[in-house]
Image 1 (cartoon, helix red, strand yellow):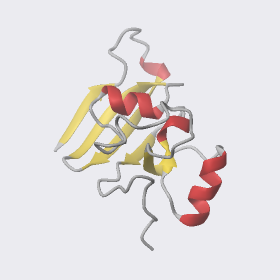
Image 2 (tube, rainbow, N blue to C red; image 1 turned 135 degrees about the horizontal axis):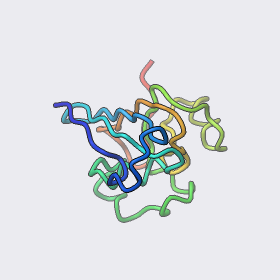
Image 3 (cartoon, rainbow, N blue to C red; image 1 turned 180 degrees about the vertical axis):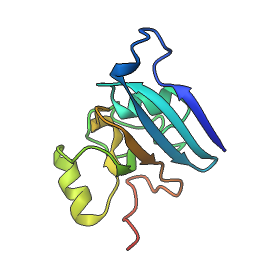
Image 4 (tube, rainbow, N blue to C red; image 1 turned 60 degrees about the vertical axis):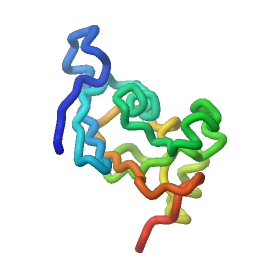
Length: 123
């Protein structure tokens, strides 16, 4: 199932300030048009595409980059810059969606078989 949604409720109408975020999930793929500068975690949650598991939806750090429960796979997107990103790249863990700012087009994959702190990338 593929679906396209406005990533911010369409309040400002400035399409130049929006970028495409493709989210791959268990039900298929959803394309969002997101205003630049938004935090990926917040955008995903607003559209019912939570990066959390049932447990971590309530037990998380609220987007502070401390608990590592909002991990997603960025297949296309910004270069890593958060301290956790270096560990994620080194050990094959997901990136923290709470620390990713949407500034460019990206492809995000939700980890459907997530363990509380993510699993390593299959090689």
